[in-house]
Length: 259
Ligand SMILES: NC(=O)c1ccc[n+]([C@@H]2O[C@H](COP(=O)([O-])OP(=O)(O)OC[C@H]3O[C@@H](n4cnc5c(N)ncnc54)[C@H](OP(=O)(O)O)[C@@H]3O)[C@@H](O)[C@H]2O)c1
Image 1 (cartoon, rainbow, N blue to C red):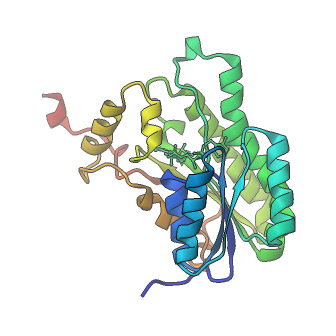
Image 2 (tube, rainbow, N blue to C red):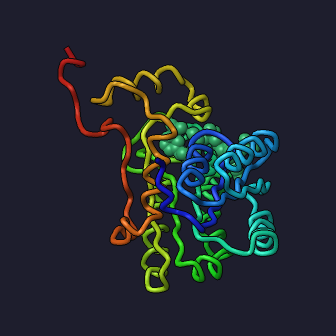
């Protein structure tokens, strides 16, 4: 039987309509939480994800808001307060990033990446803070191992994810005393549509599969269970950490690959 460790909690998952965000939304629902699915443009996918959440017997909402735009984040937080009235879990999973080498990175793309990946987390946290405080809530951000290692043309995303991880530490530092815990889950390559952002998606797939000592690509569900765990009392002593879940791809080098 599935455990219902999150019964009575309400979660917001940004970018919860597909990929890793959807897997997180469904896992939280399976564990007993009601879920607000945030999305940017694909209302049909968000409604489908919400319907799947309801399939677990939970309540679900699909709320549009572009995480790059502060005014839309403000509107989302107001909608949550008005229409839902409670929030115990904030998962910032939505992301944006322009793929380009550093010497060709435009300022607007760089700024949009930081707006979506870092500033949105700050604004969301501020916006739902009263609700999280009331519930003894959790903040979980989704990062990438590109925050501490380099991948081709990944500078904007990697740098923004490093900043996001630092922000999570500060959120944890400031809010733990108020009963709110913040942590990050950091992924290696995962089989989602985002892999097509890369210039060589096949190479990302091959790297993700062959570099892992487990010999397979990461799946959205590989991350979802860790997010759910972080929102349970079993994880109470984990505060402000970045949990790397990459199937071991960053562990080291197999010399046979270099023969
Ligand atoms: N896939 C990987 O290999 C990988 C590796 C490491 C880390 N990650 C991280 O995992 C997270 C999820 O990635 P994914 O691979 O699951 O992506 P994905 O499959 O492309 O899904 C992206 C989701 O985010 C939403 N979204 C995109 N831009 C948004 C915005 N500005 N505001 C609100 N929602 C927005 C999309 O909604 P719409 O369809 O409506 O736009 C969709 O629900 C990201 O933080 C990413 O950096 C992914």
